Length: 132
Image (cartoon, rainbow, N blue to C red):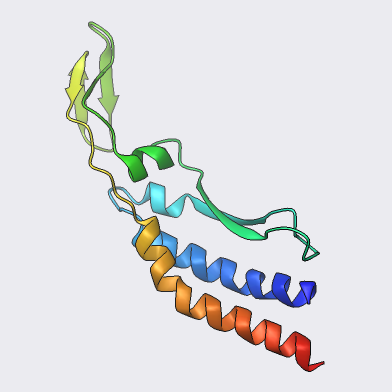
């Protein structure tokens, strides 16, 4: 049974990652492209613990928390610090007032969209395991 569940989760993992990348906010594309997934949990190889899929961002900016929770208005840079971002064609002397960002919980629609197919894969794996 545990092998069947592990195999099912291994099938779900790339589907989940693809859907997360599809739903992630896209400004430059770095955040969405930097999403990676891993199977984690004490139950890997057994049914004694939870087995889950973890989606994380490898992008340095924006951090996953900033995307999901948003940010408050804040200052960037110190007095007379030169701030430069060639990707955004931005240059200024600090400090600069950043207006903050709105939360973007792309994870909820991702989970909702993958739910049906994930359940089908898991049900099929369980049924196949008991059919042996």
